[in-house]
Length: 272
Image (cartoon, rainbow, N blue to C red; front, side, top):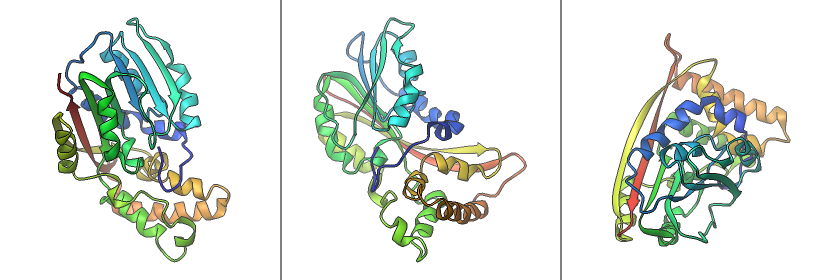
């Protein structure tokens, strides 16, 4: 995962909301059709700590599945999942940067869960990835599509203020890091795929103190936390300002704090 700066990832923080983060991947896999070969060869791009990669082994028990990520911290957490699977398959993990990842073998499924938004120019990678699929193979991915939500809008506004612009200018994901659903449908259809594109907004009920800030610390806030890692006073001051903005935007209710979260999904199958 790469943006204006490569964030340092904290698997423990990321996994604090593991159930909410994993649900979209399950919804994506539910729409993936039968793969052309058994056992299948599968690549998981931006696998993170590996906790959702195991869902692939549950769906395709005898598959050889490789999770790719460029974060040493995330890859270190995948060790608990690596090895032979209960269905006779294999689950392994490898370092790769998705900005220049080029397949070196044929896959039945290339899948990505909430990673392509960190990859500038990912639309241009689709052609090469599709060429690496077996006839009838599938490219499937989901990405957050909510840069207009207060979670991100307030973060960008704060980072762009006079106090913080010098430190944080250009670090956050740009507006075009995720495209309109029609853009993905058009690009994949023109590349010869049968395409299914849709969006879902999850009404995530978060609990605990400042849960939206806690969510952001696992993902959206990572570039800021990375940039200010050597300036703890500045880091804490920024987080405190952001916390107050989020408290107003996402008020706590007796049943928790609701974080509406829109995600974009695409499943593209190549011709047989």
